[in-house]
Length: 281
Image (cartoon, rainbow, N blue to C red; front, side, top):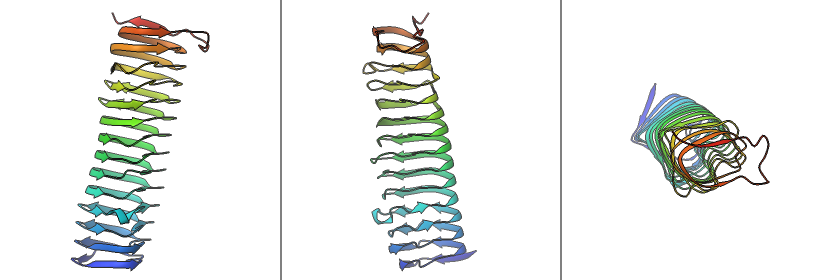
């Protein structure tokens, strides 16, 4: 493997079609497509300031690097990436990619990141600001996530998530086959139109959660006082170890909680309209 260290590049495609290359303490200044159409690349303790540095790259490692604001849209149409101990200040990262490993990464502008990506294995990721992270992603395993981005995990399929703290709005809309363990989910309109969403030992807050859901499952969860008008038109099996402020027109299944505030079953309820609402024994 060729090694380039302690130098700088700029302009258009300075390392185009490089293969078997290790960069150490390298700065990529303003310009475009520094490492386009490359393979077997390692970037260690590098700084990326220009646009689109990693497009159509196959097999690469990024460790202890920094992506400046100018390095937007840095990782697209690539695969087999391992990224560790890296900070990203630029938006629109990770598009149309697959086979991604991430550990100890922070993204300060998580706008439109991780779109249409498949097979992600993530540990200790922080997302700040921005909208729609993880849109249309498939096959995710995440252990350790902090996010205050809006509209997270929309149209996601086949995800297992552990130890997350998510503060958002409209999370998990149209998601399918998602299981979340031991997490805190804060925000409005959680999980609407989801299919096969399972929440285990989670704390949920925010208005009108978990409506229009199909085959929704809650196990040993807690719902905060602001969880009003929950489960509207959902098919649900729920065990909630707390009070539920209000429930509105669940379609079918069973909801068991420590206590209930208002239970609304009106003329707008949808068939089969046979959901059992019970106190935990």
